[in-house]
Amino acid sequence: MNSSPASVCLLRSLGKRISGTWTDRLLLALVLAGIVFGWLHIGQLAGSGKAMVDIYHGQTLLAEYPLHADKPIHFAAMGESGISDIIIADGEVAISESPCNGKQCVRTGHKHRIGELIACVPNRILVAIRGDAQAFDAMLE
Amino acid sequence: MPHSQPSGSPRPSLTRPPLKELHRKAQWMVLLMLAVGIHVLESALPGLGPWFKPGLANIITLVALIMLGPKEALMLAVARVVIGALFIGTLFTPTFIMSLSGAVAAALIMLAAWRIIPGISLIGISLLGAVAHMLVQFATVEALFIQQSALFYLLPPFLLIAALTGWLNGVAAQYITDRLRDPAPTTGGPMVETAHG
Image 1: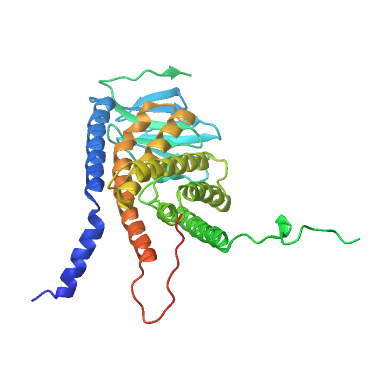
Image 2: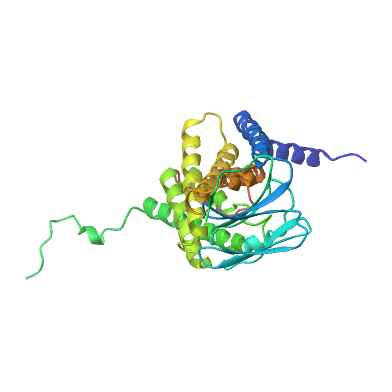
């Protein structure tokens, strides 16, 4: 099966359009390098060991629970516009209900890995999973 | 007694602006309406995940930068977010503040890259704009709403997707501006006139 010259020209033209200039490619390489570096660094910040769930309102730590608890845990986090219901069960954490309009925090679903988080920005609630090998400073309400 | 006027000089309020200026303003309005339409449509899409949108309206900002100039592009970026928030119903909410801060930062970075970096195309400009948009959004949330460094756990994957969509948006903007400047020959349709800043 022979590829027609027109299709080859089209592919070359498309490739030329997508690839950008040398400056563009250099910038992309720098951006990707920065992302990889940041990913590794943030992975270290999240810690390791036993997974813990930290629940914040703004800059205040409301509660911390082990992710793998014996029984399901329900926590009502009081935020700016109401209560966000947080459930920790079966090694996963999720926001089941929130007073925000968009409900993006609810749609985030269940999280279970160290370094993952769920945030309700309008209600200023943050649920973060960290490793207990590295603790974070926080103020208790 | 009839009101006397100097001969040959109409009153300023009755003077029609130059056609070229009217043309530029009309082009800006058209681009703004297009950007607002895309912004509102994007808000209705399920998206790749919570918070994240492809930023297709930034394509229009880039087109405005090339076709009309930096000031018009910055005004378009701000106006698009404000009018879009009015339509969506998120004006002055945290979502609006995040969107506005990201859009202004992206526009300023894109203008600076356009002026300063030699050899850059709209693809690279869009890439930098998308990355700046995401970084500033996270910084805004961390500064104003959730003051926890744990928030930055999400930054690397979001930056990766922002870089990808920024690149693709830049490809689209480059194609559109190339065609506006040098449209393909047709069988007799009108030539597209572009205004250069």
